[in-house]
Length: 436
Image 1: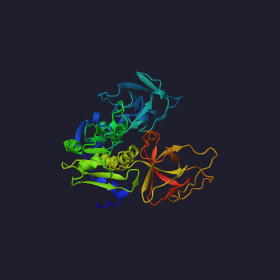
Image 2 (image 1 turned 90 degrees about the horizontal axis):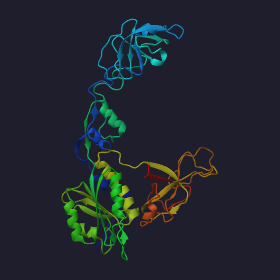
Image 3 (image 1 turned 90 degrees about the vertical axis):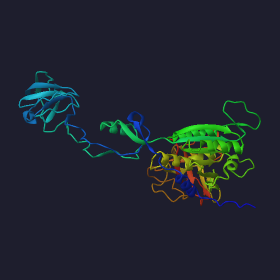
Image 4 (image 1 turned 30 degrees about the vertical axis):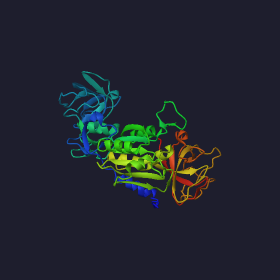
């Protein structure tokens, strides 16, 4: 009689999933295409930023010495010798008793050491009357104030957002080396699955998993190749997966990995030496598989119940895809939350409960400012300001692995350690935030 594999802990399986992932090779892209990608090489500057002293205001470039005694009652009159818009290549010199009209961003002319804002003058074009004193350097942006040659502007491993793109552009770089997005094939399996919108026979259901997982791949920054649904034919599935091997960066399947008589993914890959099917001590999502196909492509085989597929993707696949993108930080943001309703947990298995956040109680009750240990009750009658958000199960069915319709209201996943037997109202839990 075959032996039942020992349960693998959530942490062990997560580590095994991450071992399949490495940053994808760098490619060079135009800066216009870099948003949302991860920088593969540091960007530094070979010139000072700003490149020259420039004006921080629309006004007049002057010698501070000439206007140090200016006041509204005793304005100083200066002769205007130049007009300097931003981008001007003109290089006048401001001498004693003169000024240059200047726009924000224009280079400060030689001889000038301060800028008088236009509102402190009579805005003349031939002469200007200055009615406020200025000191050396006032309203002048100094060369190198932002960065000096050799400074690191954006570090490798940075997920490029709009501000990063602007910083790269500011040093005159038009192309950057980035890690490309992982291309991921998503395959849902099962004779019972029908594409959404198609007529359903008795015993058939719409395929939601391929849509769920393809959207999750894109949400994780990857490119999804959605395939399926694929029927319960092990030979055909094996041929499909081997055909994908080497053409994509990862494969994610759903369904067919448990101990039933028609577990097609398990049958298709059972003899692959580098693919392992293991039970994981987590609920939902106990039946899992992962490894590499002969060509080296990582494959993640997830259970078929939709909530199990979603939770498994969040715990095991999403972190691996983020690592492929070149990110170092692959964790979802977490928060400590107070449980409002409470629930039972499965024995000896970590539980991942879809939850939603709820508003603070209207009667002003809230929790201690110091978090107790997991499972310890909080003092809901404290008088200090609230410190923790409150959560309830996303659906009355809890973490039932088939409850896909109610999964849409989930805002987080509460992760309960395997040693906890029950979560009671008032307990604290760690919640992975899955919505912004």
